[in-house]
Length: 482
Image (tube, rainbow, N blue to C red):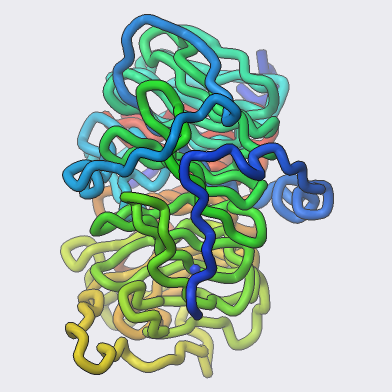
């Protein structure tokens, strides 16, 4: 079992010595129109960054020849469609040794196939003067993570020693993603960066209208990134040239999921957008009722995301039907983090009498099962045995039945949960603003241990190669392992 007590003491000691209606014509292909339209950001950032809320972050890369230049929208070429074969490419995915992107894969399952030791211990810590609100990536024995000081750090997974540092133009809340030898990420100045993974050499940059909090997605030879200017940009991976731009009427905080040649994006405009990857054309816009900054997780034809309207929604992204809606009967708080998906082999029905906290009486989980449109193919519901794990600003981590949204269990922390949970080996790892990284049994919701970091945790865990890497808002990055 996780040795909680000793780690709390060690952490405290080390901290003391810190060294988605009919779609409108949203897509603009091959132009830079609107790229520099500045938007006011103070009010929104007060609720997103100022309250240390969800960081839905990543960036994705590819191997590049040894050159470095800056590419801006003004010089972007005419639109070129993403190749059909490339449309199906989903980018990097987690394996035993690597966690290359936020949520682990293009479907945002939030599950790591790594093996962690039964007992975790503190392996190393790395300190910065500013906060780690960017979630780390782990590839090839190197940890890549952004910091509010404007630096992207590459650290050895083995001992935390710096390999290189890349200085961006502003704070980095966007989580890096690594693929084929390069790293992609955005910064708070609205610049999207591509750098070489081995040494941090800049490859190219692309300027958007304002800050980038959302993560990037690799799609064949293209990369997608969303910005607070309301634009979802499709760029070439090699040069960063603009292929197309899809625009929503509010900020983009969430990272799009990629499935069947489509990007599924939950927006701050209160819609789930289904966008064709080949040309950026809107295929469907599904109302969510209120703004969402939660990156949707995909289970077959169902997308699950939290909203600022205090709900978790399961939406059939093919026909627009709402499969179910979850809302706590008493605690009315928003959901900013992204859900994790526990597959049937991972999430088993909890045995009688072994539930960490019983579901509240009158728990609201409503909505019809997905119904296929007349003449259309039947949609595929998620497995009745699958489980959705999601935390909220009500300080609760909960497990919901993926088939109907009913509560399976709840686990209470002492702070709001903006950190997105990661599942590994039948356990859930999640941070809380109370300063703890919690380890909870997927099946029962029972606490198995915790690491007391002290500083608020809004970043999400990265798990690979027998290690857990997590940063805190007060500037400490921790690595736990055997």
